[in-house]
Length: 74
Image (cartoon, rainbow, N blue to C red; front, side):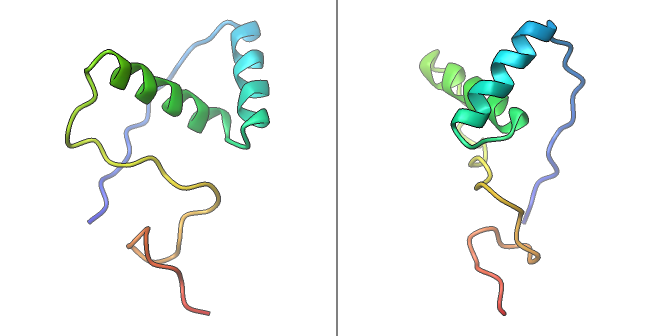
């Protein structure tokens, strides 16, 4: 069962956004995935990561089926 991901509007200083985008590119992530990665790391470091938080999405397009761990048939 897949949970719908929350959408938020985030306002950033343009220089901060540019730095995040460059960092994301260096790590082969989207800017959105980089922000989520950093927020998850900060939550874990602070001991505030909820136990029921799902895993981060894998890189690339999501599979066409509902099971993210199952590879699509060809």
